[in-house]
Image (cartoon, rainbow, N blue to C red):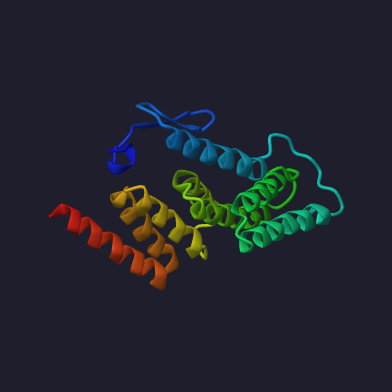
Length: 204
């Protein structure tokens, strides 16, 4: 059986200075990818929330060209996705994320959160179409970390990926948490019922 057939509770540690999360126990490609994505997102957001140096903002605090380019890259990814070219879509979403996460420190953190939550969620969906469940789960988690409420699609994709990886208990917790933010969102509620039914069936 593959390691995706079992749930393992792994000890994690947070560096008191950098706040970076790392594993104290056995690691895996999926776990390392997930921790790296969360740590990168944390560092990127801190750049906007707690800039290391106070830099006077320019007359126009938001770079309109960068905003337009981020939107263009997202739309290009969406177009490739609709054509079934999921690998190409992932490339465009990745470029969009790189551009959004490297905005100047004085640009609003909320703007960054709005941009990256959509790009991470879309990239997660593209990974799901390719069966890249660990990568999709990481992106969906990063999306909800950037925007917890009003982001039902990313919550759903996170839960679905965990189900596909056989991590049913984690999926149950994730979807239940999603419903706390999204209310009785239909697809999330149905997914939770599906997960609970599978857990009950496997328990017999």
